[in-house]
Amino acid sequence: MIQLIYVSTAARRISKDDLQAILLTSIHHNSEKKITGLLLYDQGTFCQVLEGEAEDVHALFSKILEDDRHTSIIKIFDDEIQTRDFSSWSMNCINLDHYDKKQISGYKDFSEAIHNWNFVNPLQAKEVLMHFKTR
Image 1 (cartoon, rainbow, N blue to C red):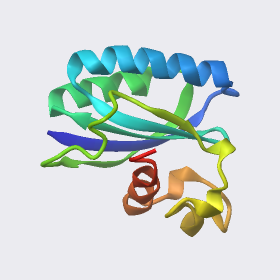
Image 2: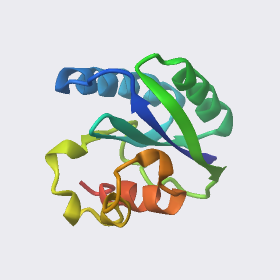
Image 3: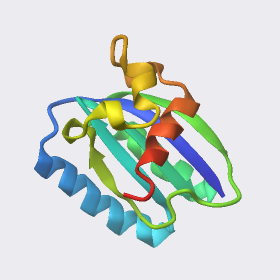
Image 4: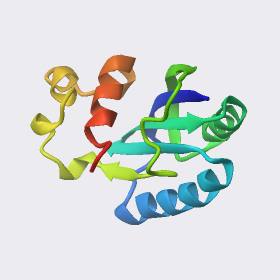
């Protein structure tokens, strides 16, 4: 089993309805393959964690690379895991635009300067993702 985390930039403005559609599609497809995870949306950027069997997660990531809804897709973590961090969700989507980011563990560490998920390191991304694990 692996965990893969990537960041990307939205190719266009993403609405609340767009995020809901992404979530519903992800839940349907991921549950079939027993993939779990979390998608964060933040001011035009995405950070997503995917967990599951390596073959299934890598196949899904290949599809994500071809998805024209985002650009500058950067895989920042891809490693074996013993247990899932996000086993409760086939997928969940959280719009960080609705949160006080100063209260999000890990976020404040990279947002003080210019905000850019493309330069966040895997430990920071994981800390932000884990902040929402039980929410």
